[in-house]
Image (cartoon, rainbow, N blue to C red; front, side):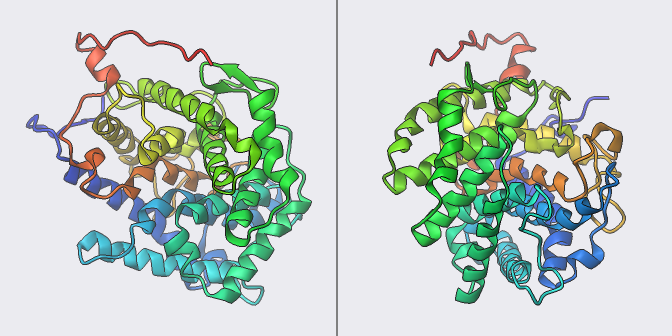
Length: 397
């Protein structure tokens, strides 16, 4: 049966009601991770669910959970505390996140996380954590004490010994270096720019789609990683007046077009194709769309409110199952519920916290049109009702 996208009485939810639902969803996802990390008990209490039998997977799973969660949560935290109920909740999670990050980079803490080359994976999730720090420079980076900042930079630099694969992994190295550049003024320039140049010059396939390396894959990695990291890295490069930042305007045009494609993936019922690898990252598949809304780069004919309403329908669908969380509130692996066989062997409990990246627009204040405008039908909902939504046109550059 299709998920109800509006109340039974046909009265559409308000933006305030949608926002409350999103905040509650974020809190449900975040609470076990941040509470345990702040209490130095993440490794003690986080479960490990995976098809993999590799013992290293468990060691790196904790950084996966922390880096991915904070990457999606950061824009909301960056709004800071205020006297509203939501603002007080943000204050709670800012404090938990900052105290947790201090443990994460403290060699004496039980929750000291793996950033080095005992495995390849730490490069990935150091990058997501770095992107989160860039998204919350005041509330996350700015609230760390000086010793913890130094330790964080040390840990990010540890990943330099991990060679990235010749695909989207190049952007993980780029993102780590972008954060180091932003917070210290120096970086490994080759690791910063190599991924940007390869995607720009070699791996673009047309109509806003990049290959994941030389080959094109029909999956959501253009959204999980490629567009969001390319855009954020290029913004930092522009801020620091680096030559290759001249690519930013073209990348923004491509990101905008890709956001348009993602919005059109959402069906009238608030579902989308379960295609490609890492599909159990749930609504993290809309990272690039969520980021486009956050940064104000949606296409002209896609309104912020229709993105809110479409994403709300998706999030409701993917969190409604009682099996989405275990008995202690930890996410379980699945697309809509508990479906571990829809995952790949590299995925574990920590990996699936990438879903938080679909919640990036919580970083927009409550009076932003994304939240304040009334319920708006999205493209597929209108089209399947017989409304003329106009032609969809490819990007020619």
